[in-house]
Length: 134
Length: 134
Length: 134
Image (cartoon, rainbow over all chains, first blue to last red; front, top):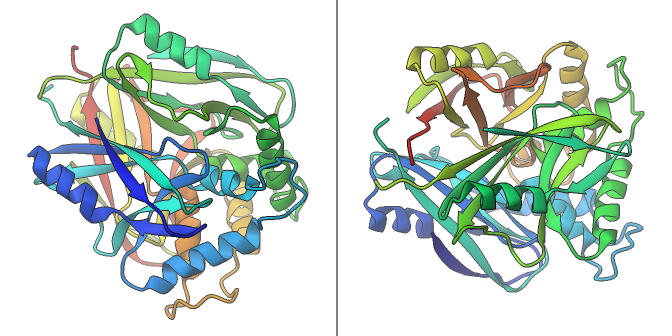
C-alpha cells in the first residue's frame, strides 16, 4: 500500500493523477492485475473522465456548483456541506485494471483527484494487486 | 463471504456501519488486504462520509431530497423512483483497504449504509480479501 | 481480462448486461470470487438497479435529463457535457461478488451498461478474479 501526497490549488479542482498512478504501476513491475485507489477524506473524491478538452473539467465543476451550490439551507457549521455531498456522489474509491503492465484506460480517459473543499494537502492510498494463479 | 443484517428505522437514513465492519475485519485476522461491501437491493446504497457532526448526514439527505424529490413526474407505480435514482448515484458497492489489521479510513470517515426507501430489514454482503504473495 | 462489445441504440439507454456477465462467470468455472467491470469511455457508465418494471429505467433517465439537461451553459464544443457529468455521477466501474458459481445479486438487481451519448459501439472490460487460499 502506497500513500501519495496530492497538493490541490483551488477550492474545487479536478487534478489529473494518471501519470503518477501509471508510474507506480510501472515501478511495481505488475503485468496483470488491478489498482485500487482510495481517498481518505470526506470532501475530496475520485473520478475518471476526458483528458483532452479542459472544458470538460470546467463543465463538470460548473454544473456541480449549479446543482449543489455552496449555500442551500445547510446546517453543518463548517459551510462545506456541498463538498461532502459532491464527494459522496463521485465516490471515494476507484478500481482500474492493469493489462500488459499498463493501466487499462480508454483513449480519452484520465484519472482525476477531485478537490471540493481546497486548497489543501491531501493523501491518496494506492494498492496494486497482481493477479494470482487460481 | 459474510451477510450482515441491517435494520433501518426511517424512510431515508445514513446508518454508520463502520464498527460492524471493523469487527468483522478483526475477527477474520486479516493483516493486509481489502474489504468489498455490496448492497443487494435497488433502493439502498453505500457511501463514506463524515463521522463527527451529525449535521453532515442531515445535509446530505436534505439536499438529495431537494434535488431528487419523491414526486417528480415519475411513471414507476411503487412511488419510490427517487430512491432508485439516489441509490444509483451513491452506488451499491464500496471497497475499503485493510492495513495493519484495521480499515484504512481517514480520521473523519465512517462507512454508511444508505437507506432511501425504508424502514426495512436489509442485507449487506461483506467480502474480506487478504493479500496474497504474488 | 475479457472485452465485451456492447451496441447501444439510443442517445441515452440503460442496457441490461446481467446475462452476458453471468454467462462469462459460468464459462470461467469460478466458484467464489468477484467480477470487476470497467467502462473505457467517458460518456458511458455502469450501474445496478431494478430488473422488473421498465419504468424504473425510464424514470432514472428522465430525472437525470431534468437535473442535468443537454444544454446548460456548457463550454465543451462537442455538446455532450451532460453525458460526461452523468457518467462521473454513476461511475465507470462496478464490483460484483461471485458466490457458489453465480453473481451475488439481489432478487431485483440487474447490471446496466449506461449509455449517455449514443448510439455507438462500446466496449466493456470484464475481469473475473477467483478467491485464493490465503
